[in-house]
Length: 319
Figure 1: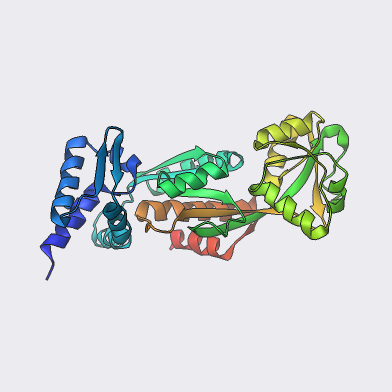
Figure 2: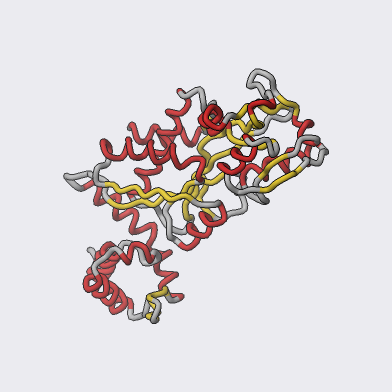
């Protein structure tokens, strides 16, 4: 027999959507939201929020309750989806991406969402890895595209693809895609690199350590656009993803070449909170991203290696 008290709580939680996300709360009408919260607190006989002059914050009991109902609520959402005569995916998904992936992600998801999930609203925001990690931890975003390695972070991590990193410089430097540059050469070239510890800098530092060389760091910049601009002006050499380089080389008057012994590559990983089960909207966005990554294999500018788990996610959308 269905426990009416439990059913009432689930219905109230479905109305609130997610007790741990202030962004979702702000999108509800205040009277209905306040009533739903009061109903839950009355049923549970415990306060879930601190009311302050600056807004609302979860109590310790609220944090525990939000984590406890995450998976059951997602299961309820999936059950409703299977039983519904209208299986349309609805909702809003916020995805944070690094600037170098923003044009691709925006174009891809815009083209995919409307025909497949017209009731789904995708919001894409750009951010530095440090900020994206903080947004994920606070529950302010649903998904983030991060550069590996990120093994120490307490998120659910899904590897999507790997792509080559290449050496870039001004056009007159004469770098040639057909003439790879030995990694050892980075010990004598003035390099423009991001700051530690994220992204390309982590890849370069690890390779340098393994090769037993010290790279000739000249400038630091956390903006890919700025690094490409400085390289095109002859201020130094930068290391950038091949896809970004190919797209901007002609306009910015850049030359580029692959790196070998070792070759460098970046890994792009999809991160999501591990303490919150994804709803159908997030699952749909994830599968669309995976399918879009697989489509990149047909674009020679990217030259990517798609992960097996990404292929499985893409296949789930087509199933």
